[in-house]
Length: 348
Image (cartoon, rainbow, N blue to C red):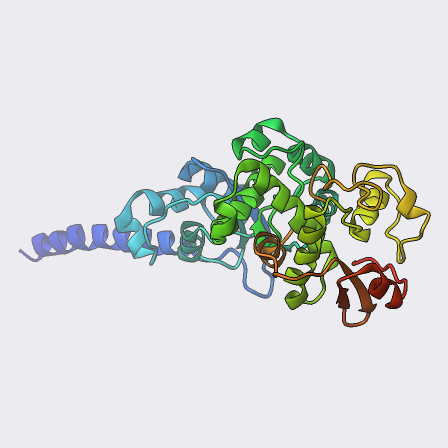
């Protein structure tokens, strides 16, 4: 009788012991492979549609987890995942910083959050396509050449019905979060989409015809490079609008700066000279009364709103009188304008 009892106890105890042992092994395999003191960090890309098993194999190969098979089982079978304290995993595409000091549950949570390792890049108002491209390359997102090429892509330009040869003027200045290696066309698309998202906030712009809209964006791009104090932007816009009505040249040194730096590839000038004003280019608003053929920068909301809704004034001239504060003086006739002195400065 005792022998039979022992056999029953053993027959129950051994399987339980094996199960407990397997659980202990399973739990151990889901623990961090290193301590925080000795941790390593790897940037792991998760493309859309990646399989859990593939992801697990990459982590094991990179020595970020102990066992790829255990990781896969914890993901594949929720009951096993719960034993390891894991939530249900859902691979969200992105680039993630995964540390060797993270356990399986922490990795599950990270890659399911969609909060990947993004690169923060800020583009101030008034940058050109080339300067935007330089910032992207410096941040390690894409090459400047690729972005400049994307900005000239006719498919992307026609997608938004932009009547220009490039996306100059339509790349909205903002802070963006990109991933390294993101396609240049996707970046340009994101920035243009953001531009029109902000345009939607200005009803006056939405109501314009395509021709008038284009002209307003060009004007905004010039205003962006001229104003330094927000409250003066509508006044500068009024000067330009008044001059356009009289078929008078805009006389904007910002357009001369664009010719020198973007078209001729020269260094940024501190002061515009009289010789510079004689440059033969359709962008030279001192030589031609017509508005330039395209934008000279990527304007922000202040300039866009000013171009769409200029102040109502009788001003025809303005001049920078305080380079430190960026303050201008506005005048109605040329004699007053001349009295204010001759000082041509550019906005950096």
